[in-house]
Image (cartoon, rainbow, N blue to C red):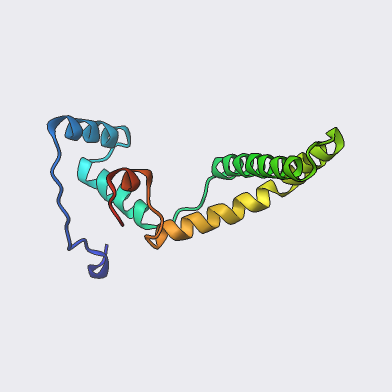
Length: 130
């Protein structure tokens, strides 16, 4: 490691005994000291994360379900009834667009989170802002 890569800055944190024990166990699983393990986790958290394939799959299913529900309710409200063929067409349309919509939603959500504009569920529960 050359001088420009030397670690010269530090951040400290305090833990309860039980939290520290858990941290030590997690670090030991990766054959690292607790400080080294924490540093790696902090640096990883600083880098923008890409959605995992499972994120896309879940978002796609949620998006399709939402689209189906809205389209079915609108069709029933507008026409008063819904044929089996019309219902199937609505379901097929939602499923054909679900991965594209999921990608757009995840891209938007990750951008909002990275910029600090998307509240997490714990922020909403406590009323805190990022």
